[in-house]
Length: 387
Ligand SMILES: Cc1cc2nc3c(=O)[nH]c(=O)nc-3n(C[C@H](O)[C@H](O)[C@H](O)COP(=O)(O)OP(=O)(O)OC[C@H]3O[C@@H](n4cnc5c(N)ncnc54)[C@H](O)[C@@H]3O)c2cc1C
Image (cartoon, rainbow, N blue to C red; front, side, top):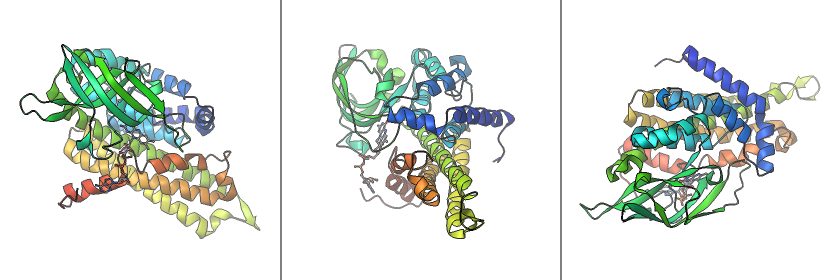
């Protein structure tokens, strides 16, 4: 494993950093407070090719991997613009369609995902099932050549900005009579698909929704991969990219918060000539947070390298560990930065407390810290399941 980025990856990092800094956290907060989206940043990132770095060149992408997409997520977050929809649209949806969609689905959706003109969001979570995906109750049933989807989804991010939603439903396997997960690409304006916005305590330009599916009629070609057997592998295909990119976003957010705080503590003086950063009670917590963020970045790099090498199972372990580590590190870094900034830490101007809700949510979503610990306990430590 190399600790160096390739020259192309280095260039990508510098270019995304420059773009993110041009917009900055002030822009992100302004959009969130106005109830608007970061449309300009998304469009520019798309035009510059950053949203499609992991999409094959024949569909208009950059031909890179999750390593490149993680760089984009981390650098935008490090500039104060942690865009959650990067995790949903290019990471989950593009990977699922590229790896398991039909050729027709790839041609229809990947070019738009690559240039940012199309967003596809992801709907798996349900009110009754929660973390237990075996309890998913959204059902797809055949009606002639069409499918009819019925069910409810919750906390679905970005539905108001997306053209399609990738819905995880269950279909009956005719050979066993059992229900198995299947993925559908549903237009967000499909008749029968309605939504209501959830009030969340997260300052973000991206929103979460309850989705109601009431006999949503979809044509046969909305079924991802065109076959019921494609469902489970397609669902799993999206998980590693999701965990790795959300971890990268957390690491970037941690870097951003520590930078804001250390800029301040290196110059602020309240006891004679010494800076507050010279007091170890201030600098050690920041140094501790920096260590945690750097450790998380190392695990992100490992997970992305394994994933891009096609080593999905090992990437699953590292990706989960990276997500856990980055979620904890980001929450620690933001909280520590707020403390180091004192009263300034709670102002909008210094742009750190504005991230408290987002990093707190990062310990719950898209997979909670407890479910990752369950995964590690069972798959790495060989422990029995309690549930
Ligand atoms: C900001 C945000 C954005 C989101 N975006 C999306 C999205 O775009 N698409 C989507 O499908 N979902 C999305 N989600 C949903 C998210 O994935 C879920 O909230 C998450 O998976 C947890 O499910 P739950 O909220 O139902 O918690 P529950 O399953 O009800 O769990 C509640 C608590 O119990 C713990 N717990 C549950 N079971 C166990 C167990 N066996 N062992 C130990 N602890 C356990 C959990 O870790 C958690 O702390 C989003 C959520 C948030 C907050």
